[in-house]
Length: 155
Image 1 (tube, one colour):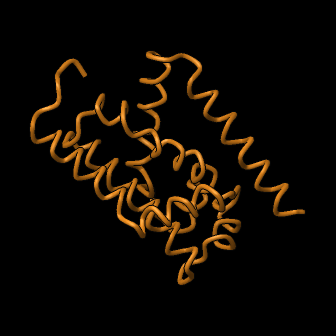
Image 2 (image 1 turned 45 degrees about the vertical axis):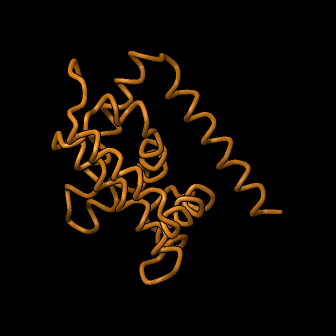
Image 3 (image 1 turned 135 degrees about the vertical axis):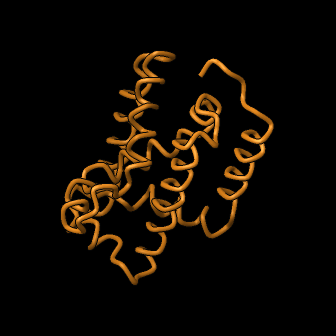
C-alpha cells in the first residue's frame, strides 16, 4: 500500500491487537502452537475434536485469525501495518494449510478459511519483496518446532 493508515484503521488495528491479549485467547494461542500438529483432517479431529477443550482452543485461534484477516481483506485494516505487526496469522495458516482442502470438500464449503488463506498468500509475496528468505526461514523454524514436539510425544 502506498498510503498511510487512516485514524480509523489504526484504531481498529489496536482493537484487534487488544483482543489478542484476552486471557482465554492467549491460553488458546499457547496451546495451538504447541499442539496443533496435523497433516490430515482426521488428525485435526483427533487433536482438536469439536466439543472438546482442545477443539474449543483451536477454534478460538483459527476463528480469531479468520475474522482478523476478513477485516484486512475488506480493507478495514491497513495491509502494510497489519503485515508489519501481525505475523502470527501466517503461522496459524501454515499449521492449518494441510487440512484446508479436505475440510472444504468434507463440509462443502469452498470458502472455509478463505480470508486467512488470501491474507497469507499476500503476506508471503509482501514479505518476499521486503525481506527475501524470511518466509522460508519461518517455515524451517516451524518444522523444527513440529519435529521437537513429535519427538517429545514419543519419549
